[in-house]
Amino acid sequence: MVIAIGNDHAGTAYKFAIIKQLEAAGHELLNFGTDTDDSVDYPDHIHPVAAAVSSQKASLGIIICGSGNGAAMTANKYKDIRAALCWNKEIVALAKQHNNANILSLPARYISLAQALEMVEVYLNTPFEGGRHANRVHKIACS
Image 1: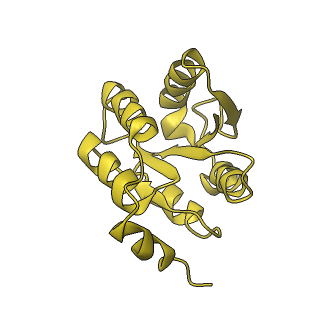
Image 2 (image 1 turned 30 degrees about the horizontal axis):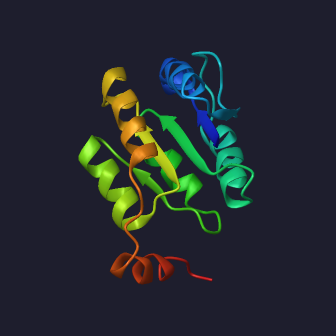
Image 3 (image 1 turned 180 degrees about the vertical axis):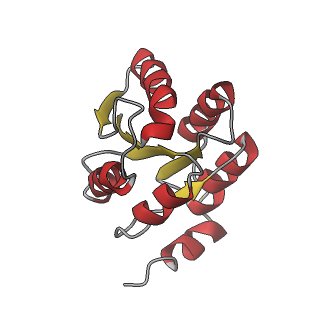
């Protein structure tokens, strides 16, 4: 699976660990994030992730910033993007099961690296339930 990943300076270490985990599992990564801890503007690294998922160049996306909020807000401006800010495995599972989240937003300053790696596993391995949730998901977009 092709997965797009992007991060600001708060998420660089997390990104490298997530990339290692995903590549070991055989996934192809599109890395749009910064590779340093030097301060950057998160939208510059999140827009390409959302664009890749929206255009179906990537199946899923993972975005990382300090709180996860700005990254999620940026990604959710794109057509057909459902970026979910998650802070534990249970929220990740629900975001996939009920909302068919196609981008996972991680708050690097509020979760441990171990938690982030577990959350990525849940994100990739949890299916969308469809059913009654499908109609709700179809109502999310404004246009």
